[in-house]
Length: 452
Image (tube, rainbow, N blue to C red; front, side, top):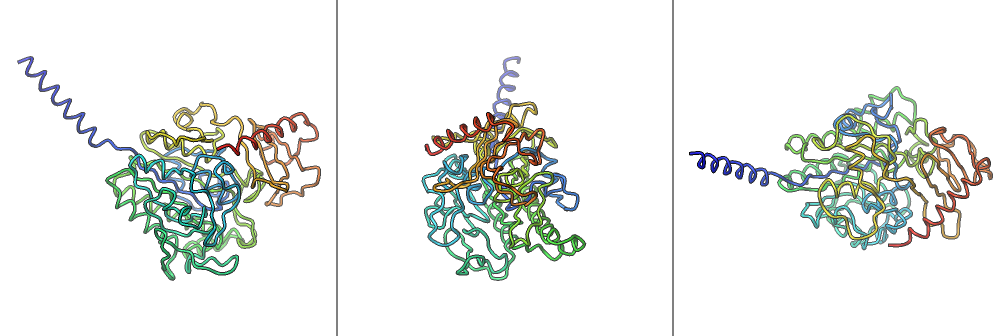
C-alpha cells in the first residue's frame, strides 16, 4: 500500500509539472514610446495640471525611474538606440533620418529587439511612428517586424496622414510596406485599433509590440473632450495638455485590451518618452514641462534627455516603487533579453540589463559613464555631453528652453548634478582639470563608438 501511495504521489507531481510546463510561457513585451513628452509631463512625475490616470496606474503597477535618459535629444537617433541597445553612432544613425521615400536611415545590418525576439519565436509588431528609414530594407518589415502599421517619416497630420512641414506635401501611411488610405480617421484611434488586433491575433504565443506613439508631437491635435477640460490653461500649455491626456487615454485603451485578454501578468510593459518636449514654432513655441531641468528637445541639458520611464511586470518587477539610479534607453534591449530568457545579438551592445536595479533598490547604476553627441560632428562643432557619476560636461551646449543666455565662455559647460540639477552655474573655469579629463573621456569614446 505504501509503494502504491508513493507511486500515486509521484504521478500527481509529474502531471502537475507537465501542466506547469504546458502553461509556462515567455512574457509578452509592449514597448510604448511617446514622442516629445516633457520630463515631468505626467501626474506621477509631478505635473499638477495634467490628467494622466493610465500612465500613473502603470507606475503604481511597476517601477518609475527618476534619472532615466534617452540616448539622443532628437527622434531618429533615440529610436535607433532603443531598438538596438547601442549608442546612435554605433547604430549608424547619429542624426535624424529623412522623412521622404528613399531615405536610407538606420542600416539594415543593425539588429533590433524585434529581430532578437523573432529568432526566439515571438510574434513582432510595429504600430505607429517609424522614422528610421524609408526604403524596404530599413522599413519595419525589413528590421524584424512581422506586422507594421504607421507612418515612416517624422510626423503626420493625424486626420489626413500627410506630412506637411517640409515640401513637397506627401501622404505617409503604410501597412506592411504598402501605402494605404484612411482619410479622416484619427491616427491615435487607428493605432489602438491596429495594436488591439495584433495582440488579439497573437495572444496564444509570446509577442513583442513596439508602439512608438506619434503623440504629443506636433501637430497638437488633442480631442475635443480634452480641449474643453483644459480650456482654462494658458497657451501653449492648453493645446499640449490636451494632447498629453489624449495620449494617456489611448494608452489606457490598449492596456484595457491586455487586461481583458487576461495577459497582464504575462506582459512586460515599458513606457518611455523619446526625449524632451519641443519648443519649436510648430508646437506654438512650447507647452511641455521639464520641471526644474534646463533644456528641451535638441538640447543636451537635462530637459532634452532626461525622460519619464516606467516598467511593469507583475510578479517579477516590484510594484509602486521608484528607482533613482542612472539608466538609459539602450538598457531596454538587454533587460528584455534577460526577462524573456533569450540571448542578445552577437555584437557590441552598449546597454546593460536593469534587472538587478529593478529587483534591488540599492543596486549599482548600470552606467558609471555615459556619452551623448548630436551627429558625428564632421567638419563642425557638434553638441556633446559626458556624464561621469554626478559630474556632467557639455560641449557646445544648446539651451532650447532659453532659460539663460549662453556665451563663448560656455563652450564647455560643467555641472555637478547632485548640487545643481538645474544646470544653472558653469563650473568649467574653476575645475579645468575635470574639464580636461571628461573631454579626454569623450574623445576616447568617439574613437570607440565607430567600432561595430
